[in-house]
Length: 271
Image (cartoon, rainbow, N blue to C red; front, side, top):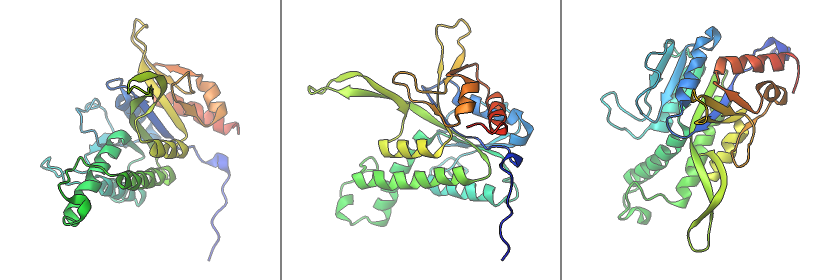
């Protein structure tokens, strides 16, 4: 059996594996879809889990798919399986699935949906089990969280290992100190809206975790991306030389420009 070919690292362009989170309506999907403006990053597929009104309807070289739903809009409770099938179709270059960038929109909704579907299928397949007596789809047990974490971590690992560009969006979560009287104290963290275990796993699998917000003090209401942690706001950029080029804040961010800065940092052999 022939040994694999040895390649020079500089002979390959880097792939993006980013997570971008923000409050609602800031423009995560619009930002992510702009990767289609670079020829070698398109076509782009948005895996639309949120099923919100698309903010990129006029974007060229961008398609979308709705996992977990039938063509008539009814739900089929197969979101995770659909996403895994989509990833395999892209990896295996199945005709019609030759996408170079995948946008998961959003992983927060994916976890919420997956938890519901774990309960749905357990109730359907094991209706007589004690745990399912008088149970509704909203009754999530501790074990369900563990199952969901394993499921979604597997999907993110598949995306990390695939030879495609990946941008994952997430909702924002505000973590507050819990007081003894049941009230809420000061903000401890602003981070992607995921359970603690899944959040840590996902942050370890991507190259960048960025927080996006709109600067209300700016007359143009510009979008801003934080590339490094600021106060209680969680953010990171794994390649130090790239982060230095970007700076701690990127105003009016464009993913193609940010990617080209990554190429420059990597081509210089900097870490």
